[in-house]
Image (cartoon, rainbow, N blue to C red):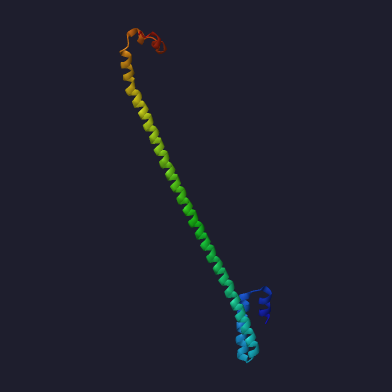
Length: 143
């Protein structure tokens, strides 16, 4: 009985349950069925409480693990989206740089090709006009 009081005092549910089971067996073997029934009922009540507590802890743990996995999956999805965005941006940048390069090449080719055309045009003009500044050529051309 002292162990039952001590377990009650310290709120040790597992020991209280085991003590009540032992007491129920002892009372039953002595023929004290009333106390055996009371001890067995307390044992059953404590056993159910412990089972419920353990079940709640397991459910809580499972819920936590589920939420943790969801958070990881969500982070992975965000990472994949971000990676896709970065790759898309890199491709767009590469395409833009390539377009700028082609534009520069085009401008250079046009300037290289048009240079001889302007020199041919200048060579068809009379020599004295070729040496004059370009703004004065329009005023000095004979009509």
